[in-house]
Amino acid sequence: MLKLKNVFLSLLYMGGVSAYAGSLALDTRFDYDTTTYNKNNNETTSMDNSRIYAQTVRVDGKGNVNDQLSYRLRVNFNKDATVTKKDNMGPNIDFAYITHKWTPELAFTMGRFWSDGYGHQGLVSAIDRYLNPAAVTNWWSLYNNGYVTGGKLEYTFLETHTIEAQLLNQGADQLEGTNYKGQAAGMGFVYKGSILDKSLNFIASHHAWQRAYVTPDLIAKDTLDTIGVKYVMAPLTVMLDYNMGKTKNSNATHDNEIKGFVLNAGYTIDRITPRVFFSSEKETFKDTTGATANVNTDYTRYGVAVEYRPFADTDFRYHVAYTQLSSKADSAGAITLKETHVIAGFKISADFLK
Image (cartoon, rainbow, N blue to C red):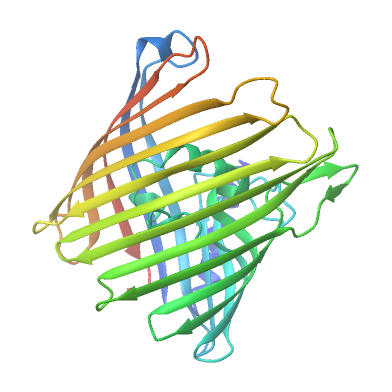
């Protein structure tokens, strides 16, 4: 009942702001997903299964109040709305921000926005993804999956290049009595640019946070660095990103490190787009005392998909996809785990105001 109430209130609110909206879209994706695991995985934690589910159901409102003020609010109806963060927003809210253009080149944004810390892969909307890199996804899960709350300054130069400076909330809030321990302790720096009539695009980012724990008395410092390139020349699109993340603990016996690359490519033939994606990552668990050897876990993900759009003027598609994740640690007795998905479904994005 509470979820239905949240949906109703969100729709009512979105309807109210639509008076200023440039667009008010309903984004929906439903999938049939058959998941299978290898024998080693089935004998440990996972069982084969299949389901029909809502991969995405959300309303996205954005527009301009005037020439200098713009906003965006995107609410998901298939995500938990429980508030667990100090920003008073649940994981169901992707975007809730206002941008003020102080000058044609300089803009200030405050609220919840995308971190730009996942390379070009992160700029692909979640509704259009069939898999995410494993290790980097685990890292971002500490920080609301890349949707961050804070403020940022964005400066545009040479028309197609931007740099951002971000001040962000600490991602993983910890309670001490009735108060949150830790301050607004995150920061980010992002460069995005393009050349050759935007056919060649670049992105580079650095993000850093600290997490303060009560028990034990520990501060974990996290960093993630990404560099990526994207080539767009119709009908071909290719994206390649390299990620490197580190966690250093102030009062513990271990640190963590992840690094790897992600490749995504698509080729559009009329209304059909085949896609391929591949990622290779390594996560290292480092014993800082030297008592035990480091443990490395290799993650490999790959997949193929085909999308078909029956209407030239409507953002509606059918899709089928096959993906597989395999992982194995180099510790004694470790086994290879494999997880395979066969996906079939549809996606639609429709603007209420048209």
